[in-house]
Amino acid sequence: MDNPALSRCRLALTLLAIAPFALGGACLRGRAGGARDIVLRDLGAFPAPQHRLPPDASDARLFGGLDLAATLSSGQVAHSAGVLATARTLILPMAERITPGLAGRLSGALDDGTFCVLALDEGVDEEALHPALADRLAFSLDLDEIRATEAQALSFDLDSVAAAQTLFSRVTVQPDQILELATLTLTLGISSLRAPHFALTCARAHAAFLGRDHVTQDDLIAAAELTLAHRATQLPETDPPPPPPPEGDDEETPPDETPENEDLDLPDDMLLDAVKAALPAGLLERLASGAARSATGSGSGARTKSNRRGRPLPARPGRPDQGKRIDVVSTLRAAAPWQKLREKGDGPVRVWPSDIHIKHYEQTSDRLLIFTVDASGSAAIARLAEAKGAIELLLSEAYARRDHVALIAFRGTDADVLLPPTRSLVQTKRRLAALPGGGGTPLAHGLEAALTLSLTARGRGLTPTLVLLTDGRANIDRQGQVDRPQAATDAQTIARAIRGQGIDALVIDTGNRPEPALSSLSQTLNATYLPLPRADARRLSAAVSDALDQ
Image 1 (cartoon, one colour):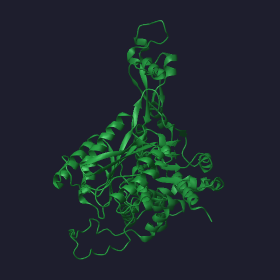
Image 2: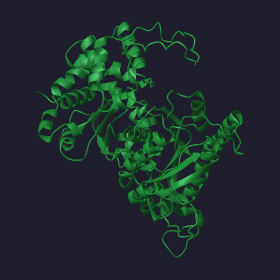
Image 3: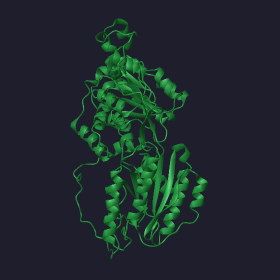
Image 4: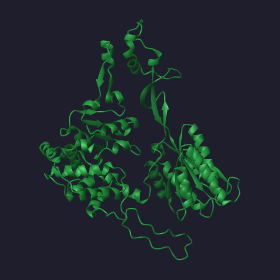
C-alpha cells in the first residue's frame, strides 16, 4: 500500500510545478538526507533559474547593491543584481533560522508572484518557519514520514506537467464551489484570506493535471487536504450539547444568543472528513485541551543584542570601542563610493570614521518558568502536589530546552519563594518535600512576588514567563485585610504592572468551574487562559508545554 505521506507529497509537488507562482511554494519539514535530498535532486519541473538563499542573506544579496570588488578595481560605482531579479525558484535551507527581517522581505516579494519558494524546515521543538512566510506557501509537507527508498517515486512526469500548465488557465470553477471552500475555511478557524485562494488554485491545478477543464468535488477534496488541513485551528462541534444544569444551580444562565454564523451551511461532510484525515499528528489533542495558543512569546527566551557572539545581524555604523568588532567588508563598502571625492592619502583606500561599521549579533537567553501557586483553602494540598509533579516533569526537559524553573506559593497574608530559579532536579525535590497550605488567598501578593522575581531574573539575563495556578477567588488585599473587592482591585493593579514590563504569562484556572474574574485578570496580563479543573501533574505539564510552545 502506498504511503499516504508519500502520495500527498508527490501530488503537492506536482501541483506546485503546474502553478508555482500562484501557489507560492511549499514548506518541506524534515531532517537533511534521505527523502529530502532526492526531492532536491529532481527539480527539473520547477522554473529556472533556481537559487539557494542562506538564512542570513543580506538585502544586497536579495535586491542587489554595490559591487565592492568591481568598484575598487574600476574606480567607478558598480552595482550587482540581486537574487530576486533573476531567480524563479528559491530554495531556503535551514528556513526555520531566517530572521524576521528576511522573512518579511521575502514575504513582500512573494506577493508580487514572480517566483516560488521551497523552504527546508529542519527545526525541532519550538523552531519553525516564520508565520508570515509560512502563510504565503500553499503546502506544508512532512518528509520525515517518507523513507528514502519510497522517495524515488517522487520524480515528475514533465510532459504531464507541461500539458497541465497549458490547460490550467482554462479551468473553470462554479460559484457554489468557491462558497464551499470559503465556508470550509471559516469552519476550520482559518483567519488568513490566502488559504481559500490557495485551495481554489490547488483545485484548478488538480483538475488540469487530470485533464479536466472544470473543477469537480474530487478536486475540492484534494485541495482541502493539501492546503487547509495544516492550517486548521478548530473543528466543527460534533458532540451532543451538554445536559442542562441541575435545579438550584446558583450561577446565572446566560440568555440564548443566536450565533453569528447561524445562516452559514456547514461544508460538505466529505470535505471535512478529508481535512480530518490529513490533520497533523497531535493537533486534535491540542485543540481539544484548549492549548492552542496565540502567543505573545516565541516559545523560547528573548533575543538580545550582543557584540561578540550569536546569530550575525547586519552591520551598523558605529565606533569601535568597548570591545566592539569592525566589519571590514561593510566598512569598505561604505567607503568605496567616495574615493574619488576624498583627498589622496598613503593607502589605496581612504576610510573616514563615518564609514566604520560594527558587527552585531543576536543571541537567545535562557527562559525562566515561574510557577505561582495558590496554596490557600481546602484544595491547597492537591494543587501544590500537582504543581510539584508538573515542575519535576518539566525539569526533565529543562536541559534540552534551556529552561529554569522557580516556585512561589501564596497563602494567608503573604507569598513565599519556595524554590529560587534552578535547573537541578535534586534540589527541586528537596525543596518541594514539604509544602505549606491553608488560609486566605492573597493573589496580589503572589503576583507581586512573581513580578519581583521576574525583574531580578531579567537582570541576570533570563527571560521570565509567569505560570499562575489559582481558582481566582482572591480575598486578602495588599494590606493583609479580608476585603474581596479591594483584593481583586489590587490583583488587577499588579497585573497591569506585569504586563507593562512585557512579561509573558499563562493563567491556569484550577477551580471546579471557570472563574470570570480570573479570565478578566488574564486579559489584563495579556496572558493565555486555560481552565483545567482537577488536572493531574502530567496533564498540567503537557498543557504548560503546549501553550508555551505555540
